[in-house]
Length: 465
Image (cartoon, rainbow, N blue to C red):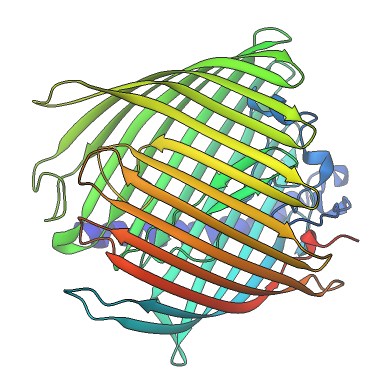
């Protein structure tokens, strides 16, 4: 019955969020009209995933690291513009909406027959973005709904929500709270780029691509406090918490992660920064269900990581950031283990197109795979602006657990978008996804999967005027 309780909590959280979004415009109307986000003119963009106002971009992408006072679009590397895009009422607006038809094919294995699933997917985004003095509050809500056979498919509807609160900002101080909640009735990762790139800020963002037959829930929260020690040096402290559930009944996995980061950064020049970081994390697995690492026995694993960091704008159109160091981990009755720690992101502008590469080694608590082991993930994407109206974006990615015999999976994607009606901001889209998962848990699919989609996307903020 415990999983039903968490199910109800997830639904109550969503209903509470909708109520907050409904009531906040009334509060917003009481604020000074000069703070109204809806009275600023949105900026034009030509490349996908860059529906950002240029005034919202940092003066130098490398300088973004010192305080991280910029708010990102939900599931995207782009920055939330701070201006209303699309249609809305004051600080509350709808920047995008989509309708897709999908054909989802699972290839047969030695133990499981193949299957094909057809549905229509409705997806939208609702944003409440409001400034109050020097603080800023942004709530983003992105629901998915599937319709098949003329009926709403309850076990294919997903909820994705983020809350960013820039609590306090001064020339030398910055305090920011971030919370991200995601609930999926089935782990169908669809509708977001698995690797999203923003060339204006030099940022990248990865989304989950793992799929499974059962429900998943995750919530990530962090509070970041940053202080500028001098004109060049800064320090930040960011405690964080993650909670996740995957599966139901006897196949329920549940885990929590408690931790934090301490970062010191030094700006060598306008184009280059270096730094040091330390992170500590405790991963607690509840040990519930037959798919847990140790059935019915909770396990705790402690990680300590220290690494050097660097970021550089190699040219006007090329940005690179990374970290390298060591991680030590220990669990009850197990000897301490040492492993390499690293991450790397590279963004390159190629005329009207862009290239993005990202590598990370991190935990998998909020990615659809609950495990006490780190996983390596690498993603590559190329966004080709073939004409003023046609964009084609291929991409590939691979993920594997560090431990031998653990989970592994890969994907290949191809996305085409055609600007059908510039004045309306209407795009014709076609997507193809090819996936392979080698799973040792019942909560994730194992084998090959093909997914085709064709539909319409309304996103006027992406259209150049």
